[in-house]
Amino acid sequence: MKTVIITGATSGIGLETARILTRQGYFVIGIGHSKENCERAKENILSEKTDAKITYFLADLMQQREVLRVADEIAAYLHTNCNGELYALINNAGCVRSWYTTTDEGYEQQFALNYLAGFLLTHELLPLLQKAGGRVIMTGSESHKGIKVHWDDVMLRHGYNPLTAYKQSKLCNILFAKGLNDRYAASGIRAYVVDPGLVNTDIGNKKTGGLVNFIWALRKRHGVSPTVPAKTYAFLCEQEVAPKGLYYYLCKENTYSKQVTSENADRLFTLSERLCGIHYCMEKMA
Image 1 (cartoon, rainbow, N blue to C red):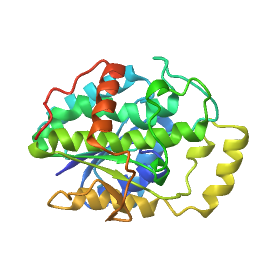
Image 2 (cartoon, one colour):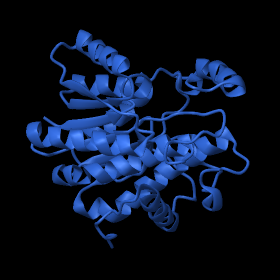
Image 3 (spheres, helix red, strand yellow):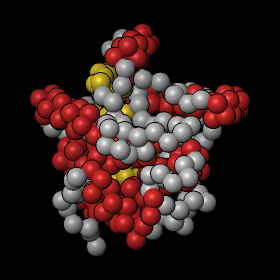
Image 4 (cartoon, rainbow, N blue to C red):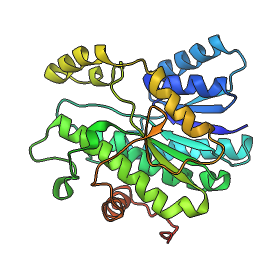
């Protein structure tokens, strides 16, 4: 049985992806930051498929110490129960913030959760992914187009704009996927980004306020059900031969920003390693 980890798996896209994958016979490990929500999500899935293979781990992925802790716990669990193999890691957890807010490390929260948490979690679980020839999937957004990484102020401390922060975090996700493929595709690991499109979820209403909360409440009404983008994550998992594309929308390759270059991916990799205090050990493949 193939094991898939999904972050942000208690609601929205993450929950629907977990639902689809358990139906298809995958063993799903969900990560959520609320014990109550994790229990509710698990019960929801088991109520529809009583023999679904699903379990949850608790972590606030916005904080790096929590990423490291849950990665250690999951790695130990996989070594005991799944032959130390991880078939897919879906870095889906995300947030929107109306104002400049930082983590315990002093990092802007959208950058920290939408992007950096996945960068660190992938690093910690990389040996398990390598053993399975696994796949890493990030949640992206069409909004990554038309923006550049603010290299001189990546946390946007000066002149914070919530939409700019969100867009930049999604651009970072696709640069991360590009960087992973440059380094590890030759050894069997593939990385992807899924563009969910406009989805009717509560991401813009959680810990936001004022204008952001109001605009999202109106905008999400026009969004599709989370089940729609969940099918693309499932598509990327279920292909026997790993697809060669990078950016997917509705189960098909899509075009992405011209900012997505190996040069920018390498620059982001170096910066992110410094921000996380880690180093991806394998050298870049030719």
